[in-house]
Length: 106
Image: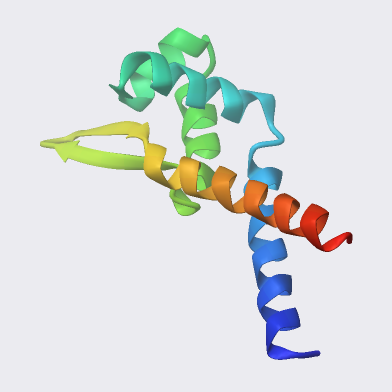
């Protein structure tokens, strides 16, 4: 496989992981809650979403690991917020991939 082919495979794997993480409706609800409230603690998210704190934490972990959410610590509190530039980067990357495939006739 050529260098370009390997780079494309890496890019596809990264995008697949991104969309895999977003496949869960609860994770999408968390992202929407954060979009509506700018930043929230796990306790606040659990209250708004009407689910347990451990379940919120479980679903925040992959969102944080992929950079879709970020944290800010204030004493003992941890505030979560959207990482809009990273979300936009991933969406743009996906659209560019599709556009280049259409343009090249693939």
